[in-house]
Amino acid sequence: MQRSILISGASGLIGSAVKDYLTEKGYRVSILVRRPPKSDQEIFWNPDSGDLDSTKLESFYGVIHLSGAGIADRRWTEHRKYILKKSRIKSTTLLVDQLKKVTTKPTVFISASGVGFYGDRKDEILTESSARGDGFLSDLAIEWEGAANSGKDFARVVILRLGMVISKDGGALKKMLLPFKFGLGGVLGSGDQFMSWIHIKDLLRVIVFAIETPAIKGIVNTVSPDTPTNLEFTKTLGEILNRPTFLSAPKFLLKILLGQMADELLLASTRVAPEKLTNAEFKFQFPQIKDALSEELSNL
Image (tube, rainbow, N blue to C red):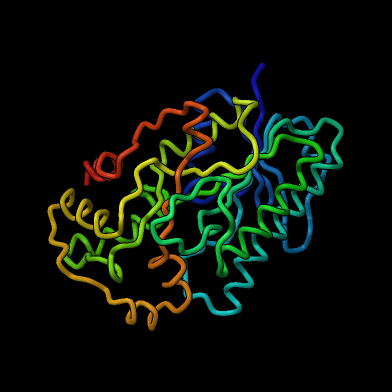
C-alpha cells in the first residue's frame, strides 16, 4: 500500500528536495501551502491566522514539518528574532493541534530543529543526551522542540537537530561560493570552531530512515560523523574550487557586521556526533567533508 506523507515548508531548500525524493521513492506526497491550492495534493494553511482545516489531514502515514523563516537570511534584530521564533512555534503548535483532531492520525511526526540547541561548546563532543547550551538559538530550539513533542499524544515523534546542509542549490554553501570563486574566501575568526554538517542526499536518506524505522524516535542529531574545524572546512573548499584561502574575517569585524548572529552561527563551535544514527547502523553516503563538497561542486 502506498504511504502518504504531508510536508510543511515544501518550498524551501530541504522541503522541495524531500518532496521530490519521497515521490521518487513511491510515497504519495501532499504539501501545505499558503496560497489557494492548485491540486488535491495541496492543503491550504496560514499559521499566522491559525487557518488549517483538520478534516484535510486525515489518514497521512507521516507528517514532515520543515516550516520556518530562514535563520541566516538577515541580521538578527529583535523583530527578526521574533519572526524566527513565531514562524516555528506558531506553525508547529497549529499543525500538532489540528492533527490531534483527526480520526486516523499519523504514525510518525518528524520535525526539524537545529544543532544551535547545544550552543558554543568548544571541542566537547555532543550527543543527543548532551545538555542544552546558551543563547537565542538554544532558547529557540527548546520551544520549537517542545511544541513538536506535544505530538507524542498521537504519533512517534522524531526531531532532527540539523547541522549545516551541504547543497550548492541553497543555504550556507551557496552563499560561500561567490566570494570563494573570486579568491576572497577565508577563515572565520580563529578558525578553531567545529562545524557540524550533513550532505543534502544523506539528509533525505535520514528522513526516509526515520519514516521507516520504528525504533527511531526523539532527538536525532542529523549531522555527518566528520566534524571539521572552520579552518579545515575552508581549506578543503578552497582546494576543491582551486582558489586561495589566505584571507580571514576577524571576530570583531563579523560581530560589527552581523551582531549576535555572528557569535551563534559563524563563530560558535558545535562538535555534534550522530550517535543515535550510528547506533541504528545508518550508513552515510558522504561521511567526510571533502567527499560531500566534491559531490556538490564537481560540475561547477
